[in-house]
Length: 245
Image (cartoon, rainbow, N blue to C red; front, side, top):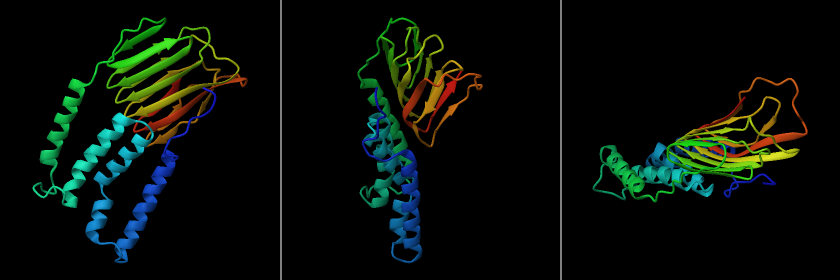
């Protein structure tokens, strides 16, 4: 990787939160002044609409699995309010939640199994995932499971980590990085990513966090090597990325 990636939507998590607050404020002002009907306000400013917005935003960021779940759940709960399902009451949770759970179960049951038993050097894995390591570059795709990757290559060249409803651990304490910047691109949703690095490494956290966080929890080192740095970029939603020593 040579440069920082951007979201296809062109909107960061912070900008999305700001836009939601601004839109809610405008809708509230319009309702209070009588320009917006109360029924429309209750539909637009509601938790199902929030799920739809978050789902659409995740899909634009190519987080298809998480985005589709959020979008479909929000759509199912907002359709009765729009009168699209006249046979279903507005308070339809007694019917919709079981249907959503059944659909998710069918999805996972018939979903193609891409699991592979990788036997690359230094790799330890568990759970439901895809992960591989080649020439110092790590690729990990973890959904509803756990992955632990110990890099033993002489030089670590970067990583792409996608974690959804699970936990991923990347251990870099037995390797080195070249001078300049080495990139780790993360997509973390409803889960956590732990990255273990030596205390003297410089770590630059550039990931966009939406209802999540990125934190360097290492004890400050005495001498930080400024000639090389590890750059963590990407997107974090409803989860966290932690740097540990």
